Amino acid sequence: MNTRSRTRSGGAPLPPVAIKKKTATNAGARSKAKAAAVTKAAAPAASAAAVAESATASAADKAKTMTVSEGAVAASKTAPKKGTKAAAAAAAAAGNGAAAAKAGGLSVGDAFPAAKLLNDAGEEVDLGAVLKTKGLVLFMYPKANTPGCTKQACGFRENTSALADAGFAVYGMSADTPTAQTSWKKKHNLAYPLLCDRELALVKAIGAFKTPKNIKRSHIIVAKGGKVLDVRVPIGPEDSFKEAVKFVEGLAKK
Image (cartoon, rainbow, N blue to C red; front, side):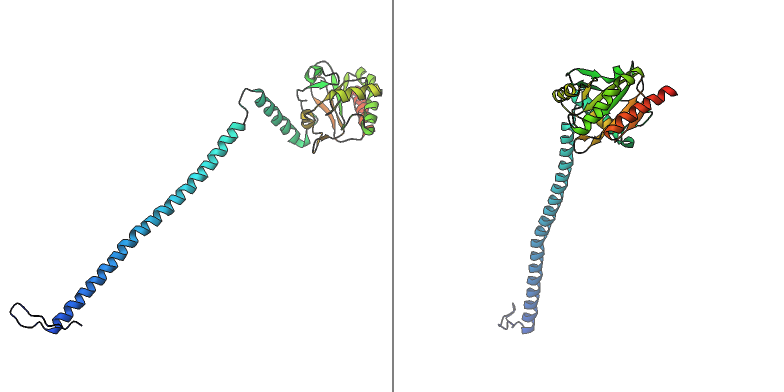
């Protein structure tokens, strides 16, 4: 405690207690001022932290928005433009996928899809045009010039004339090249066209696709005009031609 002697204006000494009270008051004021200064100093820091947190959240939201937006832009860039061949091909593929998804492919009573494929001679065959004048027996096989496929193909060879007399054209189909088909056709004297479904589009539409990129041995019988009459997927090599002939013969008896 400060006990120094001080005097009032009249020369009388200032009581010690007055000195003590004044000193305590000054200390309290200094304490309050210090606390206020600390609070004042802390306020900008808290404000800066809040601003930083807000900026971080804003940046995260912006990044999220940009990611979604960029994804949409990327999707729009990869999607084929309307009216182009790519768009038409995509639509056809989607259509084939939808047909294949329905009960595993085509069913009796369905309309046979329009299809144009190359044959063993490298010529385009329009199956829609074929169906305007006659019925169609189309058999599918995994690979040309293999034992099971050869048995199936030769069985149809032996019955091509009988099927033609009943109003049905015979076609074979696989994913082989025209060259491979031609070699096999000549080797076994196959008397009907062999179609090359290189992209397996028609195979998928029928429901004869086998992963990863193969064909289930099968056949489909279509009436003149395009209505599906019979679908056999899968079926054995010998059963394929025997059952096809039996079915067509049964139509003649109705």
